[in-house]
Length: 248
Image (cartoon, rainbow, N blue to C red; front, side, top):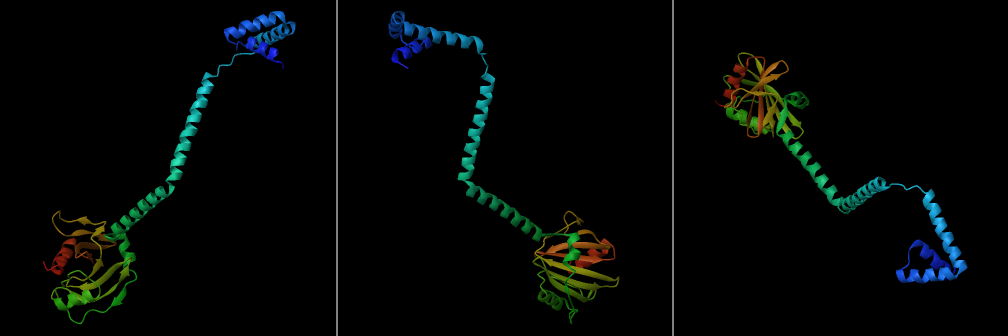
C-alpha cells in the first residue's frame, strides 16, 4: 500500500492532526485515486457500523477482573506457602509431638477404673512375707517396687500373698489381705496420682470411693503412687482399714 493510500486511511480513521488533515484533504481533492480510496474506506466503515451490534461487556469484564484478582491472590499464597513450607511442616510436627507428649504424660498420671483389670492381669504371683511386723512389711513392699509408705497393722490385717509386675511403665503391687470380716485386695500403682471414675468421699479428705466390678473400692495417693483397697464390704469398713494402713 502506497504512502498516499495509507494517508487516506488515516484521514478516514481520524488519526491525523489538524495540519496533516488539511494537507490530506487538499491531496484527496486533486487525486482521483486517493479520492476513490478515501470514499471506499468511509463506505466500509459506515457499513460496518450499521451491521455490527454493540455488545455491553462491562459486567463480563468485571467478572474477569475479579477472577484474575483471585488467581493473583492464590499465586501469592502459593508462593508464600512454598517459601515457608519446611517451617510450616516443622511447626505442625512440633504441635503434634507436643500434644502426644502431653497426652502421654497426663495418661501416666491418671488411670481409668476400667483399665485396672487389664493392668493387673499379667502380674507375677508371690508368697506372703515371712514376718508380718509393720517395719518388715514396709521393707518387703519396697523390695517389690512400691514407693508408698505401707503400714499393715499385723494385729488387724494379715498379708496372705500377692503379685507384682509392670504395665505401661507403671510398677504394680497387689497384696492379698485378710481380717476378721474377710478378704481384701490392696493395689499399689506407681507414677499415678488419680484414679478416674471414682468420687471423692469428703471435700477435705484423702479418699475416693466407687465400685470395681462387684467390689467396693476406696482409693488414695501416697508418694506419687495410687493405692486402691477393694473388698466385699461397706465403704465405711474399707475406709477404716485404709486409715489403719495409712497409720491413722
